[in-house]
Amino acid sequence: MLIENDPYRCFMPYPGVEVPSGAGPLDGLTLAVKDLYDVAGYRTGSGCPTALAMSEVKTESAPAVQALLDAGARFVGKTHTDELAWSLYGMNAHFGTPVNPAAPDRIPGGSSSGSAVAVAGGLCDIALGTDTGGSVRAPASFCGIWGMRPTHGRVSLDLTQPLGRSYDTAGVFARDGAMLLRAMSVLLVEDVEVAEPRFLKPLEMWDFLGEAQRTVLEEAFAGVEAAPLEGLYPGGIDAVYQSFLTTMSADAKRDVVPFIRSSGMPMVRGIDGRAAAAEALTDAQAADGQAAREAFRAHVDAVLGRDGVLLAPVVHDAPFRLDAPVEVFDDYRHQAMRLLCVAGMAGLPQVVMPAGRVDGAPYGVSLIGPRGSDLSLIRLAVQIAAGLPQAVVA
Image (cartoon, rainbow, N blue to C red; front, top):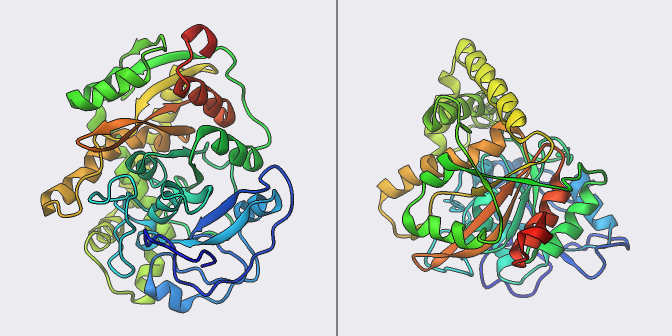
């Protein structure tokens, strides 16, 4: 790494290699990169000792990394990730757990834990992560910072370790909305403008929350007039979540399980069960899941149209404590994914902003918008976060 001090243990301890940067709209900003992306002069470890041992030193940076460098951002190091990016908690059995600067006794969130912590701790201005099932959005909420999952496929993931290609996205963390907009404007040139947003309150998502969590959303969106929305989840939350699990497993069976098996890597708790479930998935089950996903995507597109914006919770609760019992570890991900799966299943952009605290830890809120409305969505979030009245927001 190129920074002198890493009090939150969020950077990989690679020998520091300078990476050239250009000049442009990101001049003066420092950049950290999740260790799933190739960076010239570094190996790509993917949070996995076996992958790190097999990796050569890269001679070319991933396009998303290079775009930020060319725009003037200065690279300061590669950050920790959950092993093969296949978790939501940020706890790596091999390389350790970065410290959540906003709540040191809580999980930082994963799999982009190091990138989120680096921004939250003030060790860099912006950071690249990846978001498959929630790996940018959850850590942003947990660490009290801004984060963006872009419209699926809009930002290149070439030269990046895949987990599930039909879900994988290149996301960004930033300390505030203006900085997030600067970074995403480099990665996304064209955008679908939502000039007169039609705000929607998805009741199934809100009703999934406890009282304290709902209060944070109500206060964050107090200045926004939103119409209640019923039926976001056709067939109910559990049915949509099951479709997510099936399609995500089908992706993983194709994109990451072959490496797990061919490399002979040791299996830690969590990955072992998810890999086994992916392998057990039949072609018929995968096809049924994909059909359900396509129907859900069409449904959400119809609900949003060109101007609909969901005022959405990110996850169901604040980050849990590092010493939580095993039952909490087993349950939290499944509950959180019931909310996180909406943008992932539909391939839509979702921007996360800090909003409040629950049980002493950060709890963020988010906007989900139409396909391709990424930059417009960030602008709306910035306006809402500034507490502007609805007449100005709209």
